[in-house]
Image 1 (tube, rainbow, N blue to C red):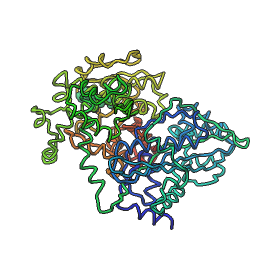
Image 2: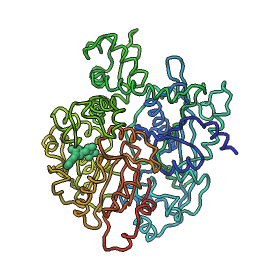
Image 3: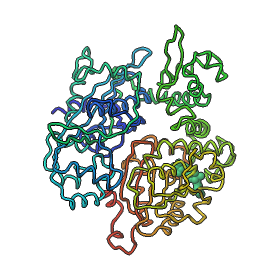
Image 4: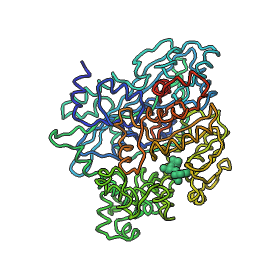
Length: 623
Ligand code: SAM
């Protein structure tokens, strides 16, 4: 009775989940909530030691993640709700780590906390006004005494890997649990009951009583909007409560619900889409003119100083800076009666070209390469292919060889784009699975090696060969890290024509979506021949949901593709099953790329031959 009135109040509004954890998607869609998924880019790097309790940490992380999405996708006169759970016990890094975590839970009661943050966003004439409602839910879980044999049997099932706290209560891990006190769904991943009660309070609040007063006075949340603080340490938190070992395990998640339009007759989400291209081009132009770089080197500058340094008109620069402030990319503050501009925390981290996590390379690629293609989208739709010839005056059969690599300047820009995304996502992809069985990997189409270096950093026993076209390999030194790991080596070749290096794990990061099924058959048959049973194949792509409705990032990217397509886990699994690879694990990383781990099956093993790919999806561990 509580739920339906709330859900019906949300109908007609856009609901955005800021991460793609399938368990939460399932819980919320079962509750009748319709939503879009927009993963947050905020990294979970708050210093846990600064928080009084694990739930404070969880709630704070929720807010930061939620606000990041709100800033990135600012709707006018809207309401957003975000939910986050706090990760206190990390995911086990390997079997020993899983053993360490689970043996500590054995025979004891522990608590699972989920922090939820709801951000309400209103337009106040020229400024957007954010208010935050937050809460947490605690559920106690008691583990049975686990014998060594049970522990190892569970660990060897593979289930604990990639699970925060090392167990999944909704599957095999349920057998370890003696009792649960509180909301079971909270342990699975989302405190639905508490969430609905909060929604009820928000929607039933009289307009004069601001929703942010419902539970926690969030005055501090106000200041958070302006100061997205960042911590550093990533340690584990342990509490002793009533003499019991209380370990907190939960997973990160956030929900954005919006827009809640103050005027129901105005299509706010359409209006913000109408302006979306202007916002993108503002970001591109500020990056191209090096606004973030000049502000980084001087900390803060007046309008005239910025205009001078970027060599642009004062009027034009003022318009650009003001637009960037409105998008949350820059801040304007008063210093001794003068207005000065400076980078926001996010801009310093992701937009300054020298920052280790800079997206600058990718932004310039979007500006110079993707933007012109999108300006011919009508033709692309009519003809069913990208418009390189119209946009750049050159036909292309193979987008890499004919378009990206035809000129050194374009090639370096493309490589820089790949490099920047790989540096931001590489760690999450590299640590998505237990790769300890593998000693040698080959990163097919590994470009600058940025992803390969993340793999060697994460797996001390692994060496990685980067295989890419000769034109790319010859430029690799431009992108070599200062302290290059000699476990990364480079081999030049064409993956459609040449022999591939031998390895026991192959990595295909952002390769499969680019090619037609026919071309992929050539590459995958070759890979299949190289792989003996047990060999791994790690695919990293943006995974579509099974209904092919989200994330839009993947579907929008497809609009300018020459060939190829975006796929869901089942579609990737079907593609690879044909070549003898069975899906074992999926990890929705919450970062820009997800990951899937396939294993080459023994063709003589009747059981594996009989397993169809949709069955393998069901048995694959979904994170
Ligand atoms: N895997 C990298 C990553 O995720 O950062 C780069 C992905 S990029 C979309 C595709 C890569 O495949 C490029 O580095 C490109 O040079 C490489 N590539 C394209 N065609 C190739 C071919 N025929 N043989 C080898 N590499 C190729």
